[in-house]
Length: 113
Length: 207
Image: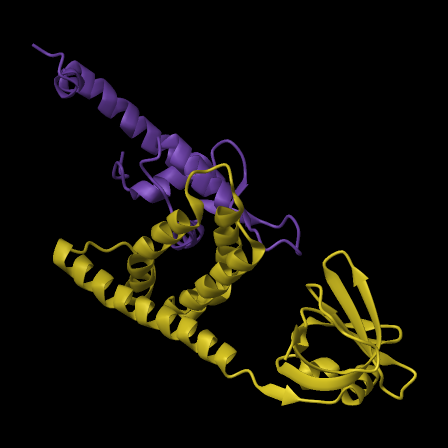
């Protein structure tokens, strides 16, 4: 595969993952990212929208018009975004398999002898 | 959270968004304000107002400087560069917010005191010029008492005006006032309410 693995920054990956179930507005994305990461990634509006800007420019997400009077903007994955997310998840899946084969996970969890 | 405190927070956040480049602000400022507002509004999280602010201010120096320096592209910054950037921008934010708050305080302190007559106030309300003339001022006036009504712990005193419309003061306490006597009163102009027959001033104090 010509594409480099894990090329998405962590925040961008988290946002794509948050949008994988349904379209969401800014604060819904922030909450979903916190929930998905067990509160390890807590985005501020600044971090969120600078990443959203990049994702829009890369064509991985798109904005949808719901209600012109609402200041909230809703975003969803594009087909390209779904493909990139799927490739990222494949990378992580393969990495986990490899780590298990090498018993790295067990070492980290302290049960390997 | 009180709506005034919340709207003040959003107001300050809106000012801080000026740290981002103009092109970025033009696209995202309104929706960022809305997201910040949603964070403050959400009572289901344990963040609280200060938690929302801490999260926002911790990130703002980095995300704003990244937008300025790289037009949003990812860059690697070493620990010291990050530290310097955070320190500089945090200092600017603190000084800016301090100046803003101090400015508001000074503005409040600079509110004028207006000596007026009851007739002037009654006329101004009829002419629709009351709030523009006296809305931001503390009003001092004297007037002859036309009637006194006591209701629970509130006293309503109507003043004679020689007009078909008049001025009534609401004192948030029991005061002793006699019809025909002259009372000196202080009242915040912003608390005035328009009645069909004149002006009702809330939170009056004997002067």
